[in-house]
Length: 172
Image (cartoon, rainbow, N blue to C red; front, side, top):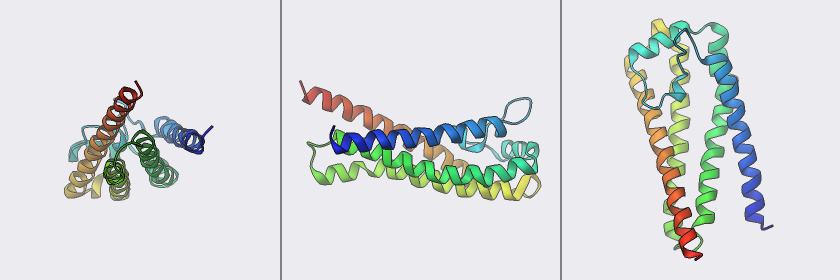
């Protein structure tokens, strides 16, 4: 087995195990209320000030501590792993492409990573402010990073699919 393949397998296992822990702990502790409100990080379309206030009003102190403590630490590692995983996959799928083009393609997974890390910092600020001290500008900014994170994630996966199709057509 080639070193690239070995490293991709190891990175895949670590990345998806980290994601499993993150979602498992988050789903068990941070889906709140009778309506099952999801944590901010999982809302593809973002959230409004009213929605953020409602979610934070349902959160108790232990849940807030979990969100900005253990889960925040895991959710700092995960986007870096995910960005690295997507970049490593792209790198392997684009061996026949000019090196500068390959590097430019890595901007997409790197952008996802930056958006997710910024979102995490902003969400932590929202949780610290709580429902009564929440600022509308902070919610708008955090929500925009959440949406942009998902856009970049979907673009990255689209790019991976396109490069897989390209690679399969070249091997024929």
